[in-house]
Image (cartoon, rainbow, N blue to C red; front, side, top):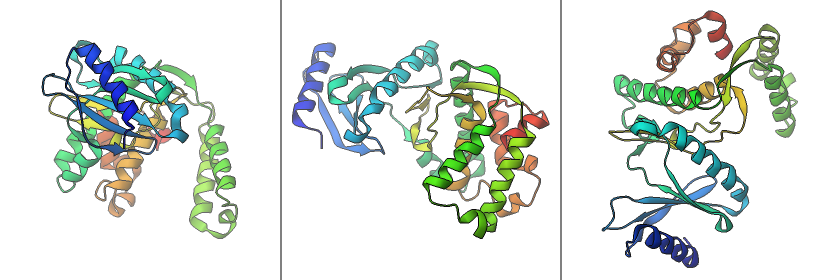
Length: 282
């Protein structure tokens, strides 16, 4: 529940900025991992607003998140762009919250579930997601660099230790095989070059809103300059893990370059068809 003092402070701000007196909070708020989002509306104003209030233990995220949304709103929202981010309005730094425009629509996560038996509709929305990601990367300091492939191996080693999973390297054949695959990957792709960008970093499908006019992305990181493949693969993982008919057992037994979902996504992004690039992503 939004504290009364904060509610009054936000409404006072809106009254001053819009010259409209009556503002209401609709509903009880949308819970997320790091925050709660409230919708503020007035019957006398054309625009609703979203107030994102961070949980106490996540409050350190507010400044980088607000900085990122301001940065990419200036870059992505030009000329009434179809692929955009919400417009930031105001940062209430002391209260760990900020105002942004409210985007009406449905999350990509719910939209894909709605069409889960309709492959054509699924692919239309997945293509839009990868078009948005391409538009984002093009405005995120895109630069060709040599990939630090050892970083992937270091990350998995750290996860093994923190998850107390060392025994799996000896007792679980699937885990052992996967770890060996990653080691071989690091050797195979040493010195490979790939485009790096300030990654989104949190491509949870709930972080996109779909409506008739726009495709809107939220919760941008924008701080880590890493291979774009990290973002591409993260979104593919969310799609393939959550939607049962995206990557099936039947697909798995075919060559990877024939997997329909990969080609739908990568072609929408206009990712290079050159074999080494696709092998690197896969």
